[in-house]
Image 1 (spheres, rainbow, N blue to C red):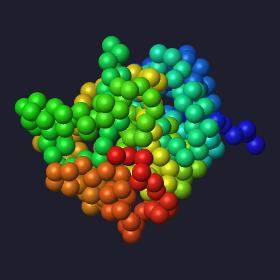
Image 2: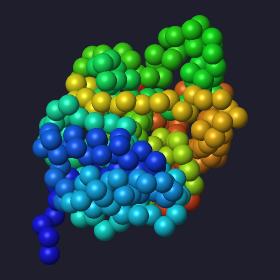
Image 3: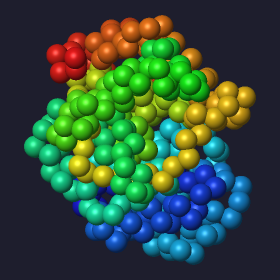
Length: 295
């Protein structure tokens, strides 16, 4: 029987083989993970992704999903059968310039109440993307999505993006962290039933963080431990586009499972309370959550 891994990395590829190859290459170059600690899910791209990735990474495990059930389903498929202490979930459009994962793992080893850790998302030029967020209200969504509205709601947007907390530079409790790049305890991930597959795209990361808070574990963001995210913000596309429609559908699904108030950001306590008594694919202990760590 193979030794238990400390870390296993999961990437879901959909028609981005070059980006996936670059991301895996950075993991190996920086000593974050070897090929035996990486799983790439080929999520029914319908192109030459599999051939390109197999040729470029012959020693990396590539799992071919029989169906494209969305991002969350792809991560769950990749996590099946993995025996590790932690999972690092990455988008293919990310890469590392240094090993910022190991020091975060060391902190998680020492702080057992951390369930999910978010890495400090940065642009290729080093500027921040602010990957820690507060739970949404409809006003928060409007402030970020409607052209011209965000300019008059700058303070509201900054609060939603937890800019002040991030700029302090110390790890802090985030209400949720972007699924672009995060570390989750493998036992917690299994206990929660993994990512909710009802979301085809978007909001599965928000949902997972909400259930993590319900389990009594914390979601913590780590400024100063960067992960480069060379991204295209598709969720801000037109509501009539595929990405726009998927984002709206996922927002409505989250609202049914938890809360999506009109004006006031709900906060951890309110989201946890709204989730009590709901049916979940995994198990949560709603009575164990601490509501004192987030203001």
